[in-house]
Length: 92
Image (cartoon, rainbow, N blue to C red; front, side, top):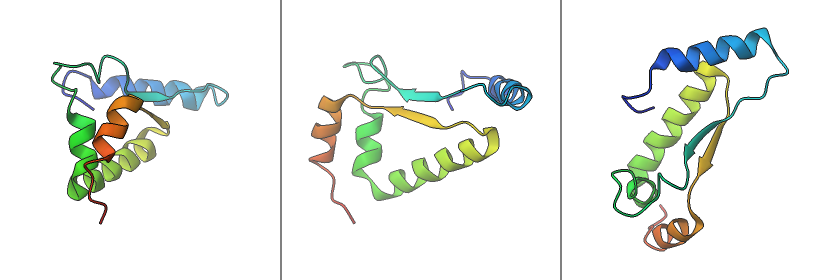
């Protein structure tokens, strides 16, 4: 979660979901503008994919978020950037 997003928004959404169990909520991480060239967020997925510690931190934080708010994450990563980033990964 970035600093511009108020955590209360996620809690309010989780509360709404609890009151309406059939409500489907997915939190999208990434997307078209997240991966655009020349944006501050553009290199982030690649940096996470290329570094084992960053992958572990990201995965740990994603699990904590889903457990805390009861909402699945939908990871949106441009296929073009995914292929380019994974080509640089040294899997450990």
